[in-house]
Image (tube, rainbow, N blue to C red; front, side, top):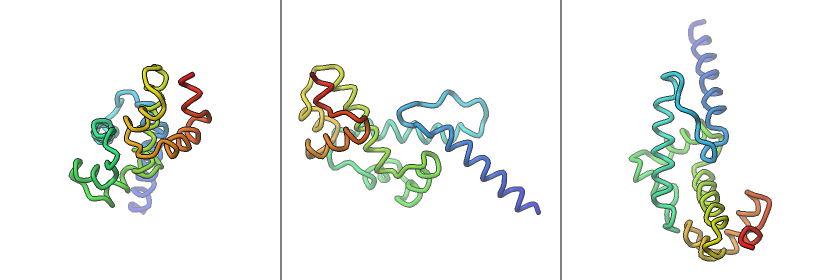
Length: 143
C-alpha cells in the first residue's frame, strides 16, 4: 500500500513539473514557491545557459551538451523529456529558433546571417524549421 501511495505522489510531482516547464524555454517559470522546484529550476537554468552560450556552433548538439553538463546522454534525455515532454535536440532547436526570431525582428541581419548565427548549417533547413515553429517564413519578419 505504501509503495502505491509513493508511486501516486511521484506521478503527481512529475505532472506538476511538466506543467511548470511545458512552455520552457520560451516562458521561464516564475521563482519556485516551494523546494520541489529548486533543483529542477537550477538544472533547467544551467541547461538553457549552456545551450545559449554554444548556440553559434553548428556542431553543438546533444553529445556536446552532455559533456559540458557532465551528465550521460541517457540521463540528460530522460530528465529533459520528463520535465519538458520534448527531446533534448528539440529543446536545442527551439532555443535556436527563438533566438533567430529575436535577431530577425531586430532587422539588423538577413535570413542567411541569422541562420548561421544561431548554429544552422543550411539556411533552407532553417527556413523550414522556422516556418514549422512560428507559422511564418523568416523572410517575412525581415521585410
